[in-house]
Length: 388
Image 1 (tube, rainbow, N blue to C red):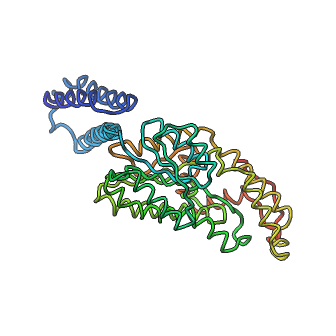
Image 2: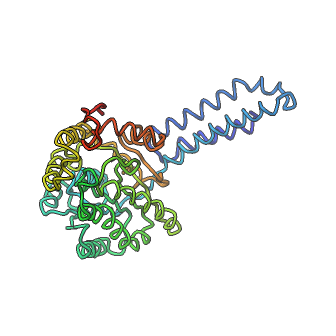
């Protein structure tokens, strides 16, 4: 590399040491730049003795690709580390703070100095948050299935922000049940989940958009990794796929107003939403209301093995470390350039992501090995072949 190139790299190093980013990212970026600079210094004499004419087109192409990749990595690390400087007085609105995930998020952001407005369905959820958080945290009742409740919550947020606008909207809705084979369900079973997990979230987002535009804020949608891969019947998968599509469309359209939209695709965590007791209770309720024809088509053994498969999937996939979601959430809210998508949890990064890109025949085969076979198929109902 010529002296001018060396001088450029040294300027980049000085800039990285001064730029506002987390220490870990800063160390990675500086280390990468040092490595690249040392390589060029080590081979500077050799490079100076080699004329460009002696290098083949393939060699030049390889060198160009290597330099481009290293430069891109350093650039991404620097860009990812930039933070919003002034966080004082910024308001964050979080839905469904009755759930363990929403409750933990509210506490996490409150400790970091945000003015958190936590929406809860129950009065108990509001009292629990108020008793253990700072005085700046405010709570409001919100039922995402009720338009009038949404309107009251939006009015409350408007009054609280007092003309400053809303810096962050965190959409979190984790109503999962009922989850069961599709022909066990009725239309109202789908409607009850979609009203909360899709329609309700879209409605409150639309009504808060003027406040988000005013503050040039950001929208963060928490979406379970089932938005990557559907494997059980019910409205839960539909709501997650719907929120994925809504987020992508909204991100493209609203960016012109300075509003950023991020998706956090998280795996299963040991929270109330993933409680096997709730899932099993609903499965029993649905089984008892089935017609004799449908019940005979599946068989008692299928019902027992299906519950075992659900129980094993919850136990094996659930992670107890909610901080993985919190860190993604914190970056999405305070980064100057938040990412489009975050993945939190090992199953979201590897298991569900792999299945979503795998050939359909492979993912179908894997799911057939996890769940039992109905008695009417003529095949024996196997025990769970794969313990996730």
